[in-house]
Length: 184
Image 1 (cartoon, rainbow, N blue to C red):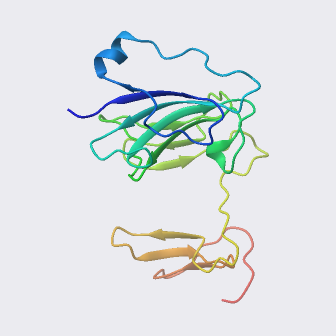
Image 2: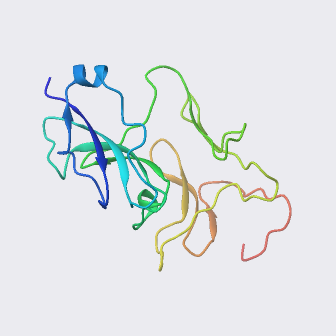
């Protein structure tokens, strides 16, 4: 196979290209990843790069890395101390090969913040009574719906439009517990 794993220790770089250090599978098995390649004064990052037969220094590779405490840039992938995983020029697939769920946990909580069950159901759990469970933020000048509920034929059954209006289509009635205001 033409696949290689590349281990990169980059100091003072905004993003790492996959051409730094190419290792074969045998070399990886015999070597340990660097324990600490950064000093506190450098805006460094450490990456493990995987590539395939189409890979170049700027395309078709996967990157798993961590930024130093003084790293700076734009966006979540460039936060100081952030550990990140991304794909260049290809989809990023995260999954399990057997009937196992995906769990997303924050702050070492015993409760998942987000779970995708073995059946594909998504659960969002608030870990505190004062936390909002899920927030949908539209773009500036949002025109598309903020949220839609669709059947297996992609028919919209209910939606919240860009102005926050709830519409439930093809139902004999909308059941509300509590207060309902607006036009009916």
